[in-house]
Length: 590
Ligand code: ADP
Ligand code: ASP
Ligand code: MG
Image (tube, rainbow, N blue to C red; front, side, top):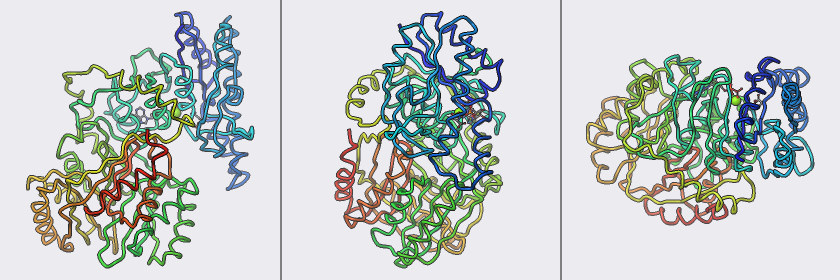
């Protein structure tokens, strides 16, 4: 008999009536011949209230006690759900994370799942019970209660589905599927019927709160089909699964993180090891860094900008100021009023002009871009927080995401891909959420152009990339950040054969707008580390920086996404850099 995991989010169990409705859904699925495991969140806004309560006591609660507190929310709902199913005449049993056998590391409030023992669940299922699992929690080796991070019940659900080899994991929530963007922010957003793991992973990390990003890592790693549906209707929802890469649309969705903060470290001595020192210390404190832009130094010193979640800013600042002193940097600045908008799509890797289109649409609305980073399937821009939602709406409209995409010729799903790999991957993992690296590739076919001292005003990125594209240059990676005196610096890569055209265009552009004369290299080396969890494992970028620094290789450009880390170094250092990264990530390479 097949196993079905059904997860009910906070709004779906917000009161007694909704709990009864969820119980009926589970009973129906059991009647249809499935063994059912329900994963339940805390009721309504319970977790928020608990967080508030703790803050009323202290601004800095011990993480262990925070987990003790937060885990109670889910304990209430599983008990009530089991009672609901009993009252309807069916067998049910509730379990906490610890009782379920969900073992995690001891990183309180952001713990990762190491293993799940399914014996107790299977025994209860065999007895005909509906098993009701508390979401979002586990237990560490020292028998302390841990939680998986806000929104973590999705991760419990998909992880259980993976461990139990369930047919499917259903996520019941207050929207009827995954939309092209948050429908609360953009009413024109459209529901997607299907989305691929990588696209969903990038969207989730970029701010699409409908799914916890780590749940999608599990789904991809163990090939679990996830079906996102409404608790309150029977509409068909969205299936998250393997999708053919041949999808025609360059952009499938957009997302926004409203509460980001930017830190800029100015005047970092331009020697290998400086950036590594900063990111290693941040990673050591488990602070995720997001957009990282390091501008190629002009006067022997570099500027490094990166973003963190706003709530992490005070801790990040303390660390960066301390490291900055040791390194002898000129200044550490920050801006806590920024938001990050991203567009995501598997198709953008094969289509030119996506970045240009995004920049042009933002320019038209007078939205100034403070930072840019791009990866193969994602472009992110940092803007003033007050313009965040407008930037999201503008991006959504620019790629006509409100319109159904044209039908693609081959929608057959290469399911076997993942399925065949599944057992092999499980066999290699020490912990279920371990970092997995699939490949480390070296691309020596590109060149780089950098323009410094670009006046900080809307429309310049749009103008530059319009001119570059008119010159027939296909741009690959782009990074931009605000450097000294509020002026921006921009670097981009292109195929070597277009290097001269790109440099010439950049020269003309710089003269026109009064920026510094561009510099560049005809041949750079781009290294791409591909895998899963590259971003949620916060130390990946730091490890790359450190390993390269120790090998004496300077990082010129970097971009990080969930599925790929790209690093650009000098052309003659490519091979050494590749070997260094292979050595650094040898344990995780499958
Ligand atoms: P739950 O409590 O069920 O886990 P969440 O609040 O975590 O529910 O997630 C559902 C919410 O996610 C929706 O109400 C919606 O506002 C938001 N959301 C953000 N991005 C998207 C998106 N791309 N598609 C659908 N919903 C989204
Ligand atoms: N109750 C937790 C939260 O609100 C976990 C979850 O609902 O997914 O973050
Ligand atoms: Mg959620």
